Length: 121
Length: 107
Image 1: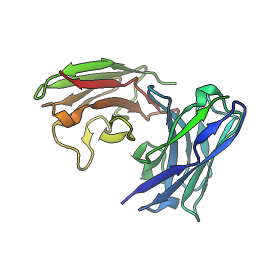
Image 2 (image 1 turned 180 degrees about the horizontal axis):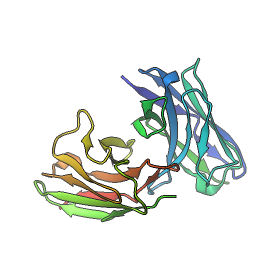
Image 3 (image 1 turned 90 degrees about the vertical axis):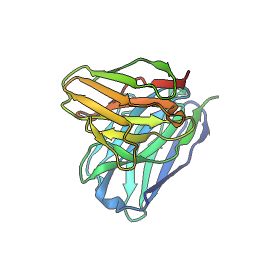
Image 4 (image 1 turned 135 degrees about the horizontal axis):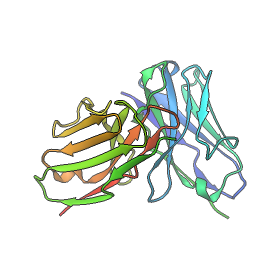
């Protein structure tokens, strides 16, 4: 069955960096686009970024553009989110999600359990 | 960006009640609308996709309808295990956007 396991969260100071990973299994990772979605404590869901199945195109929310980079390694079945210049408002649980449709960009049908990022001095 | 206005923000109902949540898009999104359920401390779970299609394995008491800008999510007979927060999501355009959520509680 589809499994997505995020890791790499933790506490970081404002202005710092962190790299999140999402290990995927149970499906052909190289055939599906992948999303990052975040949720600030007690708040709603915010889409963060998407990468196409082959890494050819990447899309970002305005709130993270220029600071975050989504990438993937299809040989390792792993998705990444490099987060630089972190701000207090980036504090959230970060979820990775598998796109619904092969080689397309739609929405997440399976989600990982999330990893918490806390930006605080 | 497409704004999704979801209402109500919270709802208290009794077991067996029919529950309805609405979601309005700021522009026409056809049927590119999903509904997710999120229980405390858990990841969101897809319940309804493309406005009205029930995800595999989801109980038939859940349903969705609508197209264009106005959408409805219904639980026909509320069960205790349905206590959660529900979100609508549009995927017509990036950035995908979510409604503010509806927190459902048992009366």
